[in-house]
Length: 209
Image (cartoon, rainbow, N blue to C red; front, top):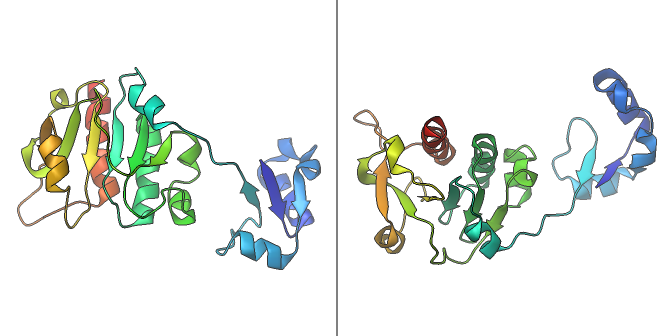
């Protein structure tokens, strides 16, 4: 991992205030760059004045789908808001999900999604796919017309599929689902934020685990 800053002395001062145990050897890990280069690397400058440049992990879709652990896998069908994608990745990491797959035009590794995940892209596999391939994992679709979610409705190694807040999941994906579940909501409320819905479903699973 490379760490760059336009002001090494400022970073050393910050480390002295927040993490004095890392000061020794810190300067050897820092690369000082010009303000213009720093702005190219970070269009939205962090208040710390530090950027860490890390290599994106390489994940195989087959390895993710065939992983034998019991945790569910999150699938987001054509999400439209990258901030929401990042928030989903964050909650997936917190709850212990197997990983996050997305489809559609938006890259889940976009800077906006990485910011929304608070760096937790490196805690779980995150991968964009063309379509969700057939596999031996049970597919559980979140659908407003589905049965109210119960802990017993999330089987081991499930793929939990979520659509957009406005349109939901496509009919094609719903037709492949082994189960359709919904989150009960009071009358007059039509939907939840995507990340909130994912969090609710994951913690229903987590509490039953």
